Amino acid sequence: MSTLKTTLLTLFVSLSIWFILPVELELARKVPAFFAAISMLGMAMAMLISCRTKWLDRLIGGIDKAYVWHKWLGISGVLGASFHWLLVPGPAGTGIDPTFADFGEEVGQWAMYGLILLGAISMVRQIPYRIWYYTHMLMGPIFMISVYHTFFSDVPFSLTSVTGITLLMVSAIGIVSWVYKIIFKKRNFCTYTVSDIKPIDNAVEVTLEANSKTIDYQVGQFAYLDFNLDKVSHFHPFTITSHPSEQQLSFIIRNLGKHTQALQTQLAIGQKVTVDGGYGQLMRKKKASQPQVWLAGGIGITPFISWIKATASPEQEVHLFFVGRGKFYRIMVQKVTEIIGTKNIQLHIQDSEQDRLSADGISEKLSLPLSMYQVFGCGPTPMLSSLKKQLVSKGLKPSHWHNENFVMR
Image (cartoon, rainbow, N blue to C red):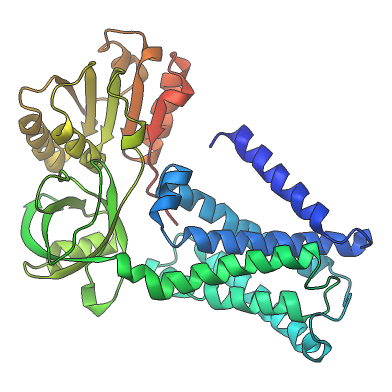
């Protein structure tokens, strides 16, 4: 979503929240109430996104985009709670039941402290993933405590007012999302078995066979895999390199962190893997009637491997620029070349140890004006950000640039 659309949506939501608050509230109470409502809405929507539903994947344009929203909604929840606590002048009503008002105020403080702590853990990338993962699971209980505080503390609205009904709906979204995630989400998971493992320098190609039901996916999508290493459940996203018509799922996983490093040594044939997918909407933006440029950096070649398999004879020219270095890169160049075969896809390789790929280098390989191409990118964020800026300055339409973001924390 563009910056303008995001700004307008934020303004619309903020004004809507302001106007559903009781008109008779004095400003000193209305402002902290506004921030409290912002916090509740942010937390509820963040929990909805964390359910990883396919309808939301399609609605937002990719689960990677949804997690960007998840991040900023979480931040709005923390900031809203903080400003509410700092600005609220004191009790302003009786809540649903005056008997529980004092306890409602007390647990509200607990929820705020917990929310700030979890928010801080999420923002500090140096904190290990496992600590972040397990502490993040506390967000559901903290939201439940916040709901209790909202309705049982000394609040200045009745349950049947517009404010009360709206907050009930917001609370219901958050609670239902949390219950769905911890109880019902697993029903959509599929169990696979590792059938083949092929080392590729500092990466590994993993092939999975379904035990019973299979996931539904499109070319270029990714799935969340839980290898249950050390008997601990952790889902991580990896791009699917197989074609939906194939009987097996395949992934190329590079050693880029502690989890992927462990896979290089601990993964074994016969091991059970839980799969949730497929996700991602990059393929939906791919129009066969328009000339295309595919930009791949390192392990970012994986979605394009699936695309190449699905491409019989392109209607328009397709240019694949593959950037990388080292042994893994050279092996993947050979693999991609073999998959392309005689297909009308022009492969341009760029060893980053010799030179960087630039917009000028891309443009000189194209036969048409840059404005006519759809550009799809997958690779390191700095590389994609730089190329997007360069290409747009050379005439690429911003709406013709497409990429997915795998930084989901």
